[in-house]
Length: 89
Image (cartoon, rainbow, N blue to C red; front, side):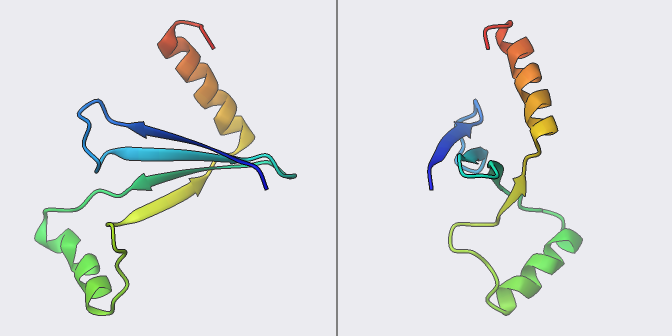
């Protein structure tokens, strides 16, 4: 299993604003984004987190999630980054 990882941090440099892209070269190829989830300051939005905490369902380093990136989305992301960089990709 061969995997490539890229970490990207927000320009504010906060560790709460970080995303990781992992690409596996196995067949079929897979790509995942792993990102830190926002913590809610609203009382009502914190209720679900409170229940998870009460039942021990929290993670040690905060709330993280991931999404699988399709090849179409990867192409769109590539095009958007190429435009951002100025066509250098």
